[in-house]
Structure formats: C-alpha cells, structure tokens
Image (cartoon, rainbow, N blue to C red; front, side, top):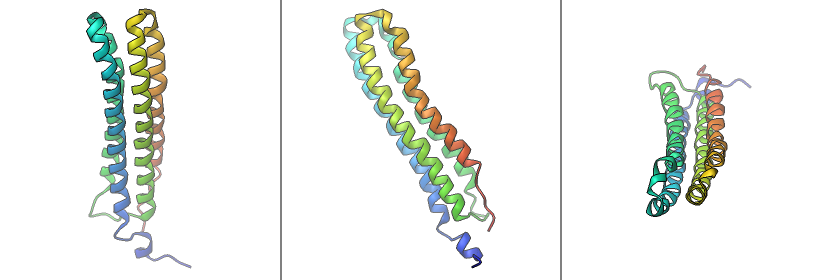
Length: 164
C-alpha cells in the first residue's frame, strides 16, 4: 500500500510540532519556577539569621533558572522547522512533539529536585558552612537531569524528515 502525499503530510501535522514547542516551554518553565520558589524559601530563612551567606545560597536559584533556558533552546530549534511555506510531515511533527516533551518533562523533574535539594541544603548550610561543596555536587546532579533531556531532545530534533 502506497501512502499518498496527503497521508504523509496532513494539514494537522504541524499541530504536533507546535505542541512540542509548548511542552518544552511550559514544563521546563514550571520546573524552573518551582525550583526557584522552593529554594527561595530556604534562602529567605537563611537571610534572617545569616545574611552573610545569602550570595552563596543563590546557587540553587541560578541553576533552576537554567532549566527554562533549555526549554527555550529546543523551542527555538523546533520553531525554525515550522515554516508554513514548506511541507511538514507527520513523522516530523511526532519527532518534534517527542523532543519538546523530553526537554520539558526532564526540566520539570530537575526543577523539582533542585528545589528540594536547594531548600534543604541552604538551610543546612546556614548551620554548617562545610556543607557547601556537598550542596554544589547535589545541585549539579539534579541539574544534569535537565541537561540529559536537552541532549536527547537535540538528537531527536536532528532526525526529522520533511519529505512528502
């Protein structure tokens, strides 16, 4: 059975690409916002008792903000393929949806873990300053979850095919 052009490139195929853009931006931004808010609660608690430690305690907030940048990067790359004057296959739409979901959901998970680790370690850092290196290592391990998602999303994004 041969597939016709309309079967391979239906008019609704670009919906899935746009859904990938939305998933990447929304989920990674929610993860970044949660990580920032949760770590910010710990920083506010530390700031009342040890204001000298606030600058080093901002590390979880900075690392959580990077997660939204991962979503932005993959969204821009997917949007570059969404040209209304060119054919857009259903295969490409599903690849872009998978790419966006990969980056978005790993950003959401990484943001949750950065928030939990950031809140706990910032409070512990106020009690014992020797925990700073441990805090940085745990935050790096939490951040790398989002980075792995970005790498997989970038690899997926290169597998597109617009042949109809």
